[in-house]
Length: 316
Image (cartoon, rainbow, N blue to C red):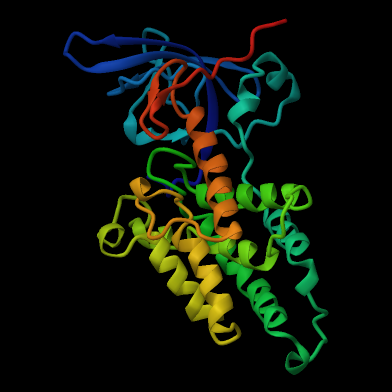
């Protein structure tokens, strides 16, 4: 489903649920494209209320039928997203759009954020390897690995349903955590090891590339046999273990093992260091924050176990 070369995003401005004479469920939608053009269409085999959702369609909306409506089905629908909205006038017309449209980060932004966080250990390329500290060696190798890692994250979702559930969602989710960490780093009233938490944040969900089957993003057996927090921590050891002391590696791996925060959420161990605690909270801010906008207004979100109000604030 994610292999099509043409993707368009649409904001749903009207949604009416109905049942056809043959018993098929559908939504009658009015959607707005990136240029502000309204399009009427049917969404077959769907019972969700999609009002104020951003949807992605592969290869656009089909041609209108005799009734003047266009129709599309589940295999043309990619889920809730919107990273193509750039028209300022349209954002002004539909301000709610801006609440859940998060452009996927470019590689330059991703790299720049890491450079700021790891600035104390970044060295000039001409500096001999033998003169580098252990942390400096890790950071040098990290930036060598980063282009391939970024491309990998751009090919996978961060979740199957609840948040960042689209191709590239893993890159966006990871970037959000790193970006929030960079913004908050000077405000923490306690000492925080930026090296430990940044490395853990970058790789905390790496194992999700093993939890999903390629292209269709269905769960693989690895989900049950080896949760992504375990495979992520093992991967960090495989790549950087030769440079790190046992204690420092253990601190990084603990952040990854514990990033889900609570035992009821399947965490391998609860956060026991300040870096692990902060990472788990930033993970919540990114994942649960996105979940607030993944359901229609006043619908129940199983991801965060509550009904959600996600309409714009009333005017003062």
